[in-house]
Image 1 (tube, rainbow, N blue to C red):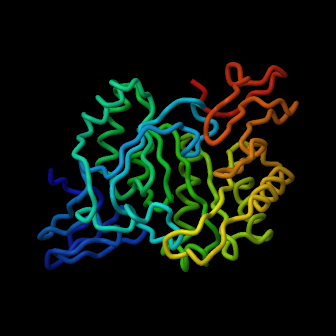
Image 2 (tube, one colour):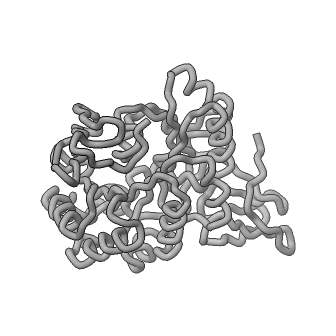
Image 3 (spheres, helix red, strand yellow):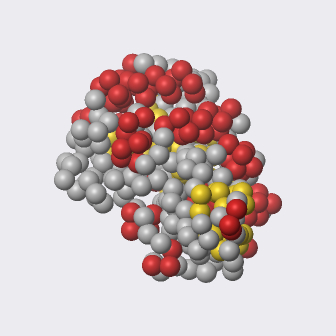
Length: 334
């Protein structure tokens, strides 16, 4: 199915300007934008990935990671080819950094996505693996149907999207996990994007009351200094408050950074300790063996309320969104 893209402007000589993300790509007829999945076809911008996911899988919601959103539940994870950033360390580069016609895809309409959820009795859809922004039209149509079916939609995103399309999407999603990758130089040199646009997305999601969690992948030699880690923590605290969960995750050599060593788990632990000392209440270490760092503790009495192991919930003491001591834990619990 050929699907006309949303958010673009027609220019002279059959050129168009895509207005979906901050790249604002000017695309000549017969060419694609930076994301590789939006084609100018004789002056009409077309999505090449509508109805064409390259990955559909069932995951624990903790794997996204979401730790304060329906813990222990499963999500139907969906991705298409493409991304609007070009991160040198992308772990999913085989699907994010390729043209859609060069990889295997399924044919799955939004209606069929919802039917799949109903058959499997799954109540969450997560747009993830690659960047959901680039398959915006497909995501939006799925999310609209999901809302009617009382299925909750979430995004796992780099946050590199313009305000207008984000505002249109917000009313159809319940939760977002956004990567906060590093400083401005890191975004320019490692990711091919800009920090300010991502920060604006994070703020808008938070102001709009979408459940929000933040992930920071720590890469040795790139964004792992104590000074940089403290700056990211302070930004989260000053702009989002003390209750937004912050996940520190480990880098493993891949794509164009195979010469860089894996992140020492001790660095993640140190980052977590720093964040807690700065006043953040819910700080986690991901994709490493660290039960302490993946457990949700009550900030008042330190009771272990949600204990996880390798993205699986193994113990739950949370009752009606709170601790037995009376402390309410922010999140979406039912």
